[in-house]
Image (cartoon, rainbow, N blue to C red):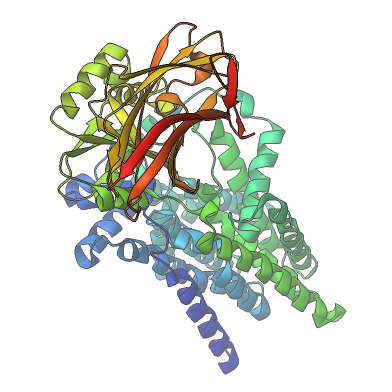
Length: 624
């Protein structure tokens, strides 16, 4: 290796390391990461035991040691993945050297800056570790096969590294079996073409040995797959295979964090990879071209084959098959120099721009954040008061809550089974909120999977004032002030549109304080079936008519939309209007009304047969 080549590979490795540790803790811990941390926090024997996780136990073992050495900070738990990503870059360089020195350097450079590889090198999950093992397996497989083809004995150390790296891959993630299946098929093809079938025997011996090593976990995987089987065999179509292949190739090319329109430009990088495949074929390296192409296609076929018995497909599952794509792309960039260096410069610039834009979106665009549970819990911690309780709706958030939960605030997990009926939900929620003034409800994930009738939110909306509601990525946070009024203190007869009557309202007090709440209950009645779902607004205006405080929400915290109301039924609708901490003293006007979202069209208000506008004034509030 020339000195300049050493310097170039060193620069690539430094770039790879820098990009993998840059903002390593910039994203919040998300659901799967939290579960990994929970498992790794248990005693070692339990953390790696069967039945704990659906994945093999190598990554939990690595994270178990990491937590005890460096703690549970986002940077600490993600650092092993960053290191695995760095080692992968070095291995891809060696894999690229089989195709040529120039290809090796470009392959290392592409791997260093690959948005897809960096994305999973900054995640406390097993994917980067599996990729590292799979890349080492591909490299040592080819070196061992080359020894055989040249009629030289394969060094025992090379066999050992091959077995070890392969076991690292499959003991991290089961989709790495696709790499071994490709190797199995390639060995059979080579043996048939060279008419030397005996060369298959050593490979069979080592594969049997690896199978024996994996045997303790094989039964667990079959049990898991059987439990997830959904008989979606109609998805075994060419269209589904095309979808899996296309999604994965675009992820290899430019990552997962590009807007849909820009992501399509990734097909240009796929074309470069195809040119690289053609270059290897015409340059006398047909066996290498076949091996790289076979590994890629076997990954797609493997994912397509087991897709009907898996809950869903994600591109990250085939991360282990990314190195062949990067080597082929590097070959495509370096193989056409006789047409001028302009090709290499333009192709590399195009590729770098797409991946840089993908990384920018990943780091700084909230659209592509993985989770905001930490921000949600920080909001509770900053505003918690004595007498608060946190209610967790959906058991799947338990690991995240364990990682981020505010100290000294009581909490209860709402079991799924108590949400099957209104009676059981009411009994449980009454019991767990007894003695508390406020309840913070955290709805995590898709409520259709654990509380499709929104019974927890409905009960709290009937028995408390909604004081806060905000959507976070993957969760919704609501705060209810409990023990709401049940009697109409101020009767009214006001009609909104020709569909809804305001029967009256109750207001705990007409005197408010900055940082506090105004507790208001509105009593609605449907005059006839309502086709639309309207939003209620509660606004507090200063003496100049400027908005000083507001809360907008569908009735009953969204659990009783107006298009579900039965004519004649009286609907109590509770609100806790938050007053800003810097609200000036003085007199303010309290107004309410309804509008249609998203048109923002307010319903006209009629009183005594006369239209009086599109708001209902409830009176003066004094702020002290």
